[in-house]
Image (cartoon, rainbow, N blue to C red; front, side, top):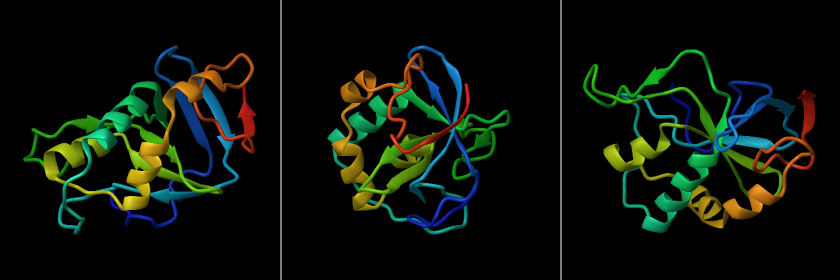
Length: 158
């Protein structure tokens, strides 16, 4: 599935968080902020290649250890890899950006970066580097152990 970097995310109207540490599933909310696509790559479509800072990859991996968004029943296989050799993914990550913006990336983004040399836009790299995963762990909805659910989110289902 291809979306141009920094285009508006419109795949799903609502977001659903899964907390990887607790295994808690099912916090659905309607975001009040703009979601921008990052890293939705597809064979035959151009993408920016380049080197990313090691600290960025460490932080992105840390985010993916605790947050898993919009988990789907089906999977998407990397079609940049030879057939039957690409890893599969079935979720997304959210990274808060400047006020009113969150970046929406596929869970395969780390594969795209490390294996295919994808270089996300600098705004996304800066946003990932600004994430404080420990603060996410301390700011949670009552009785729900999710990291980074925006304050203005409209909770849909318990």
